[in-house]
Image (cartoon, rainbow, N blue to C red; front, side, top):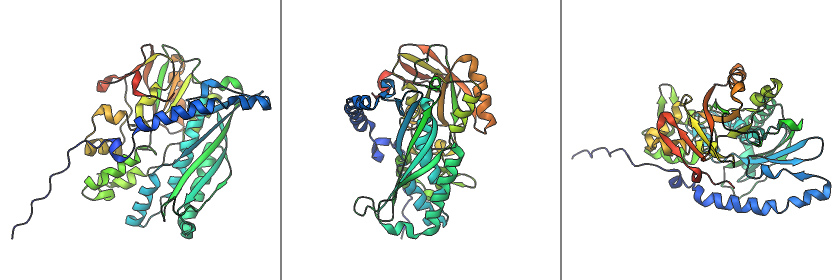
Length: 376
């Protein structure tokens, strides 16, 4: 009796669309929703307020309420909780304190792009049934992590909703989201890109890993790995543990920059669409990247095993850069210093150029044109 030969490793490229996420289908709906939403802006006039139209298509919506601006955002965690559940089954450990931070970060890191100070976070915790809360240790880890993340961002936890949605959410699962309201005060803190110009510097803040975007791709990769989630990314670090590194909270950096007298000309939270998010500003600018951040081991591992070329990887994942600050060139070095004092890696990574609108990552020879991002 002969022993069957081991199957050859899968060397085909695993793209995000194959994991069930196709932005070519999602983005048109977002644009349609934005246009419908914009038609409701006149309702604010009934209350004596007005929207800042330039915030449409940005990461947070901004309303002028007179002496200051209010900003708001709602974001969901996505599928990272599924990785936490599977790793809990495999290891017996709880990962929900980190999952809580991920959820807060999804909202807060978007809110601060417009120059807002986060004020209040609301929680949305929807389960497939009330039994989810019967695991008291897991539920308390979620509560404790949520509180700590709020404290790290200087934001109050205002309340929330905990629906049990059997038949909508799968049994034994939880769908997490956060809404955040912030204040832009004084109004000169506003950062919607009106000051962005050629010659500005691009400062990239390091990510802690995959953060909370690209998890559908990360999960789809598991069947290819010899030990699944327990496959080592490097000695002593399993793939699942690396994926569950909590998302970095960048609000302490933007608050410290304001105290230092630095107002970014524009900001981008590098989430879905990867580095293509650097093209978010509606103006016709070019963006030249000359220096790359360190690549987290988990993202290098994913790129290798999913067989992603640099164009696909940097257009999908954060690849080590979690947040971008577009600042006056004269302020760039101080921005790096402020971030590093807070324990967040940072570097002057590039510059803004006069049009055409495009992004060039010079060390990799990667180029994205104007049509690479459709958010308006």
